[in-house]
Structures are given as C-alpha cells and as structure tokens.
Image (cartoon, rainbow, N blue to C red; front, side, top):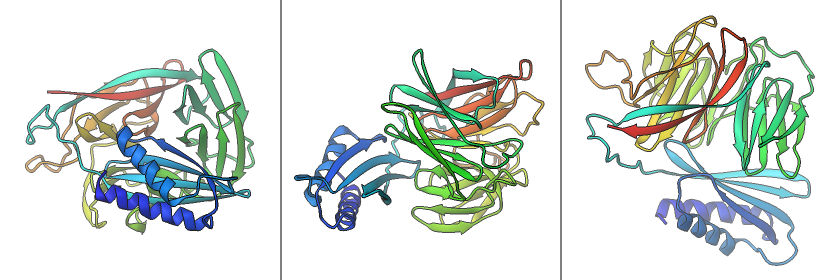
Length: 362
C-alpha cells in the first residue's frame, strides 16, 4: 500500500470517526477500481483501526473506492439518524506502462460494440447494478435482470427539454439518476425503488467532478467543481472528459477546448462532435469522441490518444478505427473501463443502447 493511498485512507477514516462522534458504526467497503484485493483489505483495516465496529451501530458507513484517469477516490457515505453525509479523499494514480507498443507509437485501441437494450422511447443512459441492468428514460427507471422486469416511474413535475438528457450513477445496489432540474435516488435490491425531487444540484461528470446543468438550455453552463482543484467557471459545454491531468470540454461553440491541470487554455479541436468521454483501456487512458454530424446523419465514435503530437496540425491522433452507427449518437457516457453509447436508428426511429469495450493491440 503506497504512502499516498495510506495517507488518504487514514485522513478520511479519522474525519469519518469525528463525524460519527467516535460511536460504533456498521462498515462496508466496496472496491469499484483497479486496486488489488490486498490494497482493498488494507484500506478496510485502516478504517477498522480508526472506527468502532463493535457494539450497537449508531451509524452506517459505506466506503467506495473508485478511480478516474488521474486519481483514485475514497468516498465515505455516512447514514445516521436519517441524515446522509458524503466525505471524500483522493490520491494520484500511477499510469500503467504499455508493453504492447513503444512510447512514440501508442497501442491501437479497438472498440467492441455490444447492444444491451432497445426501445421506442429515447434512452438517456444504462448502467450495470450487480447482476441487473438499469435503463433510464424520461418516464421511468427500468430494471432488467434476465427475464425479470421492474419499472419505477419518474414523476413529470415540470416540462422536460425537447432533447432531454440524463445520467445514471451506481454504487452497489444504490443509484442516482440525474435529470434536467431533478434528481432521483433509488435502490435495485431487494426490489426496485425510486424517490425523485426537483433539484438544482450539480450532475456527476466523472469521479471527483461535478457540474451544474441548465435545464432550459440542456447543457452545462460552465460551473464545474473538481477534486482536487476546486470550482471553476468555464464557457458552456455539452460534455467533458478528463485527459490525464488535463480536461477537455465539448463546448457550445462547436469546438472541444483543452485545459491544462492549472486550467490554462491549451487549444481547441475542431474535428469532434458534442459528445466525448474518457475511457480507461488495458493500454492506458484514451478519449472517445463522436463526429461533428447533424441529427439526421449516421454517426461514429472513435478512440483518440490523450496527447497531440507535434507536426499533426493540432489535431488529436486517432488510437483506432471508428465504429459506425445507424443514426446519430444521442448519449455518450463514461463507465470507467467501458462506455455507454445511445443511438437513434434513422430507419426505424428506435433507440438502442450499446456498451463499448476497448481492447488493445499493435
């Protein structure tokens, strides 16, 4: 266990202990990252050494270990007497070296496209929750487990935008659905349940990054809060992706703007569409981007290297072949080691959700 990871675990454990007034807790630890089982066990040991786990629990503490392209995240969710508190610590990750290709020629990344759901209503997002899949649209959250189907309605308390957007975030059996001007929280076990409320709360962009969403404009107006780094105000954008220690934003001006770790502008990309996402592949981090097509044209998604090589005219370098779709891409969300893409078929008008899984080669 590295010093950075140990320090983050100890700091968060002590903060949690203070938050529960050093009373007994029921502790669970869930690893949703690439950390080993040994590291996960060591993190649990650190929390058990700082928290009281014997006796009648006065609170429930859920520890989730996750990651993005630049850091690992420890998220503590405290449930006590009907209140919920979330605390967070992070430490930088060490990029895994690629043995498949030399440094001056990054490994080729191929995306496998797997259809997971299809329906007439626009699909906003899909996500895996244990052995079940959750499907989000403007009217419901649908749980699919083999042949089993459960549905929880989403109340329409205000008019939705024409091209509504939404996102799912899953932690164990609990999940959050982000919608324009509303947030729904629910659980997939033992039965599907859902509670929704009108809310201006920010959406989750990536682990450790949240951003306000403007329901009337159906985009992010530019206020983003990143851990570490704090809050920033940027031009309005449709989607965003961490790129190493930098960020890329598909802005409302039709260009993808690159910002360094110190939030200085590092140029813009003209060849991408409005949907981008980060993905962690077996040969390192990459960026997924759509083409700058219209709503009546077939689209494609391609993988790109994070860096822009000199002499390439400022254009990002493709990391592999594009995968074609039968219509426009209506949603593209990162899922860590994979991504979720939704497309509307121009012939049938139906919406299809796909899981994009990367493989590496020379």
